Amino acid sequence: MRNFRGMRVLVLGGARQGVALARFLAEKNALVTLNDNRSAENFSDLVIELGALGIQTFFGSHPLTLLDECDLVCISGGVPLDLPIVQEAQKRGIPLSNDSQILFEGLKAKAIGITGSAGKTTTTTMVGEIAKKSVRDGQKAWIGGNIGVPLIPYLAEIGPRDVVILELSSFQLELMTISPAVATITNITPNHLDRHGTMQAYTAAKAHILDYQHPSDTAILNREDAGAWDLRNKVRGKLITFGLQEPKGDLAGTFLRENSLWIKDGVLEQEICPNHSVRLRGTHNLLNALAACATAHAAGFSKEAMQAGIEEVHGISHRLEFIRQWHGADWYNDSIATTPERTLAAIRSFHEPLVLLLGGRDKHLPWMDLAAEIHQRADHIILFGEAASLIYSALDSYEKHNFPYTLERTGTLPEAIQAAAKIVQEGDVVLLSPGGTSYDAFKDFEERGELFRKLVEEL
Image (cartoon, rainbow, N blue to C red; front, top):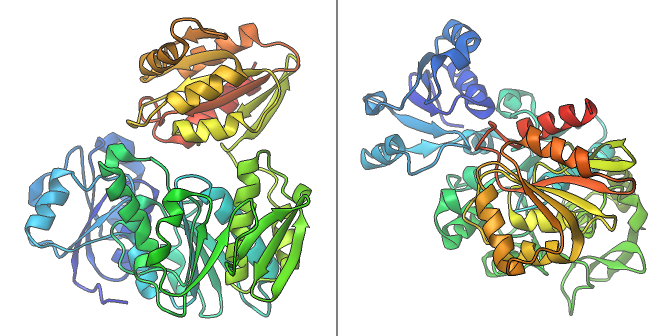
């Protein structure tokens, strides 16, 4: 790891990642300034705490003077690279970094990294549980990155025999110049184009998880997803694949056969576990389990640990999370669905009559595939948030002004919940799977999902 003593570091973004990194750098005797464009009143307690560590803070804007005499700029996940202060830093030749890059620079343990447009959190959670079943003799499994708590504060505690499992977002990867020893890409589909600008730029950011691997490393790719599979020529070491269908030829990978998960790798061909070991709804979660098993195989974990770990994952907050039954209907929170494609996968997880809550902020992604699925599956659509009118127009265009379901526009998520409560019937599923981001009204999808949970529990 580089020596941060006396280095003048500007950390952009005062959320969880940025604060953890600022503390870490201060402990390494760097001269740290934490900057966030939100007003200081959002950080009143934090200012005192960070001040005691010698960390300077500046809130409310991003003045370019913060770059004067700056040696390094560290960017939190939610901070766009086209921000003027970031562009000015690049013009001045100031290096850019982030918490994941700095973690990898100091990491002595084997790292497993997982990325993708969808499924990466569930896959990471499954691999984490498998790792917990596998470690022994004082080893420890550490799970973090884009989920849970940042691992940077625990860097000194992570031993060389430990296993580190990290969920990595495109925002983190685009600045990284180190790849994990085991790198998994669940899929690459249109996402975050509001941040990356083009699909090519977004894919390039995701591909960084492979770009710096060594010949002794392993890449795990979804062979049935065009976006991920197109990156197979970037693989520098061993390739392991996953998909619903059995891999062709001599491809190694996981697959489904006769209601079970299987793995094939050279002369090895064995059953891992029955499908019902995967406790989560939907074919997409079977695919996540196959990704997790392929990743676990690359890490050297046993099939017994794979089954035991997968069976530990009963549900993940904001991901098809069952909230309660009310008026005979099951209410589900899928606030993580911030793209139309994720909503489409959620809809396909149910066969019951469907009341679907759609909305949030649009990410400049196409809605017509979702409109086609809604035509087949939905009974009631309730729109809310900033993108309500845009979604209405997309559905109206597909249906040619003749909706086969009821369609209601509301302003806010609480209003959408009340609208659903008025029409719900016994046997229905009420599904919050917005298709848009939460940033029109919430700080993140978690805050949106927590409000949904709270209001549904209060019905």
